[in-house]
Amino acid sequence: MKNIVVLTGAGISAESGIKTFRDSDGLWEGHDVMEVASIDGWYKNPSLVLDFYNKRRAQLKEVEPNQGHLLLAALEKDHDVTIITQNVDNLHECAGSKKVIHLHGELLKVRSTKNPHLIYDWTEDCNIGDLCELGSQMRPHIVWFGEDVPLIHAAASLVSECDILIIIGTSLVVYPAAGLMSYAPDDAPIYYIDKNPNSDIIRNKNIKIMQGSASYCLRELKF
Image (cartoon, rainbow, N blue to C red; front, side, top):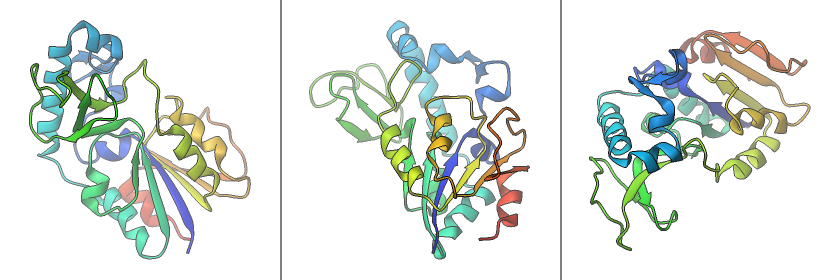
């Protein structure tokens, strides 16, 4: 049984029909990404931000895990698999993956603006006036630009102990997530799966680049 860590990005969710802002011109569903995915954007216009994530939450109800998600879940039959995802959707969980770390938060949760440790499951709209138990406005449980990534150290520790690292559907340009690859043991093979892989990544003998979708390339992996 191998200890496999999988780092996933927007590319794997795109196969299910979830749009990503980095595949276009910096816009995310018609919005400047900094308006809806930064802490400054929240302070400037919280109503806009809440409405944006309400629509993303509604969209999530209309999509399903794709074959890439299902193949990763199936790996758990023979291996110890941990998924570290940059995605805020729950498609890995819906596919059956048991150990999932969401680096950038979760769309189906909200949290208190007064106490970040007060986190609530949330499947419907969150609006101005929805308050936590402390009486403060609730916000999406999302790590925005301009905020720390609380789980990055735990993620780095997991990567440092892996036998195999699989990277799927990420441009490897958003830090600190992009730096996780450097924590992999020197003898751990790294598989980088992406339709348009970043050719600027540090190449060494342990990295195998597989150009294509997760649904296709994961079938080609043999451990």
